[in-house]
Length: 87
Image (cartoon, rainbow, N blue to C red; front, top):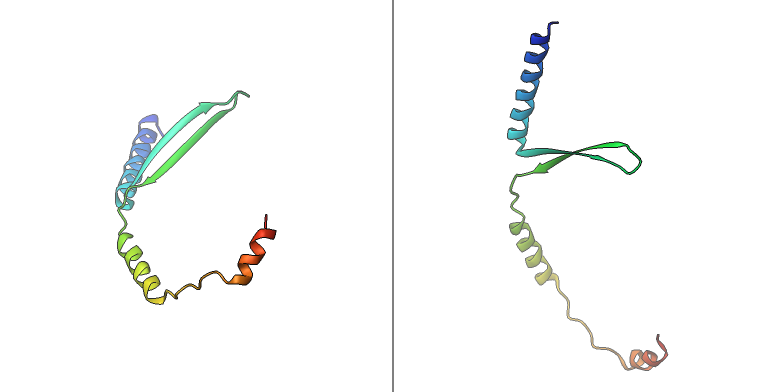
């Protein structure tokens, strides 16, 4: 394989990765740092850019909790007596 063919194949792979990231609505970023020990650390971050409709789910859960909510009892006298002995 010639250098030009290798470059073309690399460009084709890069285009395929870019297309996949657009389809998945993902952004890729990379960082490279050198540690105090002299090691090179490569970090690749994939950020999900897709918007999720979670507000509706929270509202449904809130409605479910309100319908199943039980009244709470007040503190009993026995509990109040034990309060002095607690930490």
